[in-house]
Length: 367
Image (tube, rainbow, N blue to C red; front, side):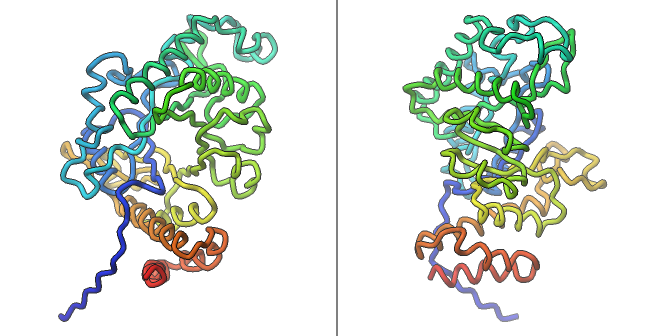
């Protein structure tokens, strides 16, 4: 069968302009295999390294040489040798800093009552923690920033508070607030407290450390976090409240829990970019052995026989990321904005057959 191949002179950079952050909890096996699989698909495996009760996964606390030996190859890129983007390091990485590390909250927090009475009886958070707690938080941020700067690592290191009061237990380390998807005023005030400690610890450093929050109700934040946040990850509700999300000097990604089909995975990436986001976060992306025979909306990578495997949805997330890279090149060349092309490009995404035509149209316009 005759085949005609046309090569178009377009370079897609190794550095990611749009981020696909593959969220998971707990390190999958094989760890390096899953990191390489994500990297190969222009995505990043992002592992939350601590539990709702303050337990940091073994090996994730950056206090010993073993931490740098384990993760250093991800940050300098040597872990990705042989892959298409082997010069690019890991895009981003969660640090274990949270309300129970480096100091246990149960030991330090002044209020000892019940969760039901916390809203009424607890002192303001700045008074509920001793200065020694705040000092250790700041000094830990500063120590990590100094080490990252010394090593010249280019990975973005995220400080992200994932825990919620719904998991509170009286006899364990537990969070008194909803720091992930905050709802109430005390939640936002607590996030602001930790964000200030972070900024004080990072002050003067050029290391790529970033304070990140996940919001599902951006309309409730008011001005309580202004000037404190580097990076927002927001649910699809951002479409209902764009004024509460964009234009605040913060990077914006969007998260979701369901990828119904491979085509929808690709379309989600492109639509999010057109809306103004610069990343997507599929929630809980690593499946189990059962995921091979039972569909799970959240499983886009699968383990088997000590290896990591990609689903078609992961490949289509990569397809969408590549579409965005091409769109960015086109917008830069024509000096267009995302808003100016949103309606036209979106018309390609409703139908999988037309979505394939999108890439050809964009390439033709770049030439």
